[in-house]
Image 1 (cartoon, rainbow, N blue to C red):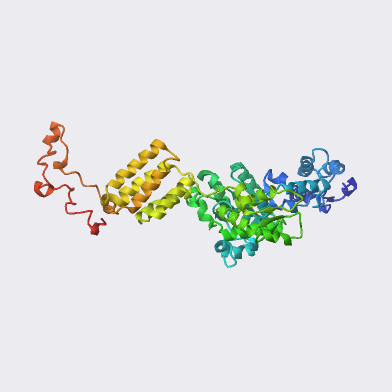
Image 2 (cartoon, helix red, strand yellow):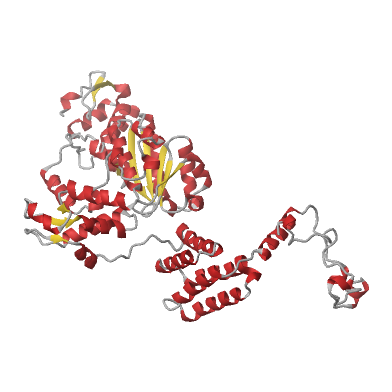
Amino acid sequence: MSAKNVNPSDDKVFCPVCKREYDKEIIEKHVNKCLFLNVDVSKRNGSHFDENCSQQKRIKIDVSPVRSTLENTCTGPYKNMSKVLLKESPKSSATYELSNKPSKQSSSALINDSKNIPLAESMRPMLLEDIVGQVESFGADSMLYSMLSKKKIPNMILWGPPGCGKTSVANIIANICKEQNNMRFVKLSATMCGINDVKEVVKVAKNEIKFKRQTVLFMDEIHRFNKLQQDTFLPHVENGTITLVGATTENPSFSLNNALLSRCRVVVLSKLTVHDVLLILERAVVRKELAVVVDSISDKLVCGDQKKCVIERQSLQWVAEVCDGDARVALGALELALSAAPEHSQHVIGLEDLKRGIKRSHMLYDRQGEEHYNIVSAIHKSIRASDDNAALYWTTRALHGGEDPLFVARRLVRAAAEDIGLADPNALVEAVACLQGCQQIGMPECDVLLAQCAVRLARADKSTEVYRAMKSVQRSLTEAKGPLPSVPLHLRNAPTRLMKDLGYGKGYNMKHRDESGLTYMPEGLEHVNFFDKENGG
């Protein structure tokens, strides 16, 4: 662009960005808007990832010839337009690429980067139809499937175990936004950003609304923000400045703000089944042409390509079984096995090869999260139901997952008093002895102590009489109206002369209640028996 495009004698000025002619009165406002819409997204959003950045057209402009002319032509407040250009071009020119086609250097860089992309990342679904599993939440008949098909994205929290597809759903939402000119997708992770980054996204989102563009913010690991930090989202989700899509592995009831939950729909994603993971593995092998899948090793002779690896179907089945429903772990294990195969020759990856290279060490268990309480609850309820087999399984599974043995032992002591009680008083003694033994020898030696105690309690006779009577007393205290009745005088201790003069301890004797002639319940409750079933005992 040359200086002849700007004629000081005319009332019209050419925009140096879009090369269109505008009145002097509106040229500054237009250039500001034009620069904002065409500038590289990374300049607007800082270091945030924007899925639409690949669609942003960038224009190559040399503003040095028109700089002086603009300053002379746009007098008064319109001189700020040149300052905008100066800010964008510290070296006398603002450079923006006109074409979306990458240069040769960037193309080679992209090719090299694609080689380093993990298989789990490259296999993320692009369409709703590509989602494996999660039929209840994203099946063809679900409400979310219908909404996303119509390009409508609600505020939602994706809750599920690792590798179940939370980030994959976000990837599909990003593609939906990419197809729409009025939508913008921003991805952040609470593990790498703070509240200031969120505020910056909101700031840009407010400006985007002026151009009728909606911002969808995907916040991964949203539970890493504390309750006070989560309040930052509230006003902007409420007024529609951003559409929030959060992902968490923690129970939202405990880890997220109730006010935020009331503004978002919680979508529960379940653990993938073995069939789902196997389907993902076979899809990865076929689409990426990683290997040839055969039913048995003898079938390898039919394979035409002698450079590809051959992998047995039962090997993929085994990987799907040991990954505990985590597709990311399964794809990573498959990628590791294929990477270890020799190049330029056909190599058979059998089941034994995978078993030697991949140990089953992955199991979903969170010592501080919901699974921590779910497992110990299963132990207690199995003991209550006298299911010794289930009690042994859940106890061993908790220890296998790295649970604190003392936590399990304390729960066993509770079960001995709550569910066995007076039907077998020795059970409580043995449970306490188990707790002390765990404190003395620790893991792994104490595992058999816990297993034996759990089976012992499960096989013991059960009596909840004391527990139910205690709950009845607690309920009576909670529902009592007015002040609680005082202790009768004859039951009070009288260590001083004044107390004796006041009648403390007067008439007390040590006989049985049926012979003493005394009442031991407070006034008004003399005839209440909390062990009666009528009172909940």
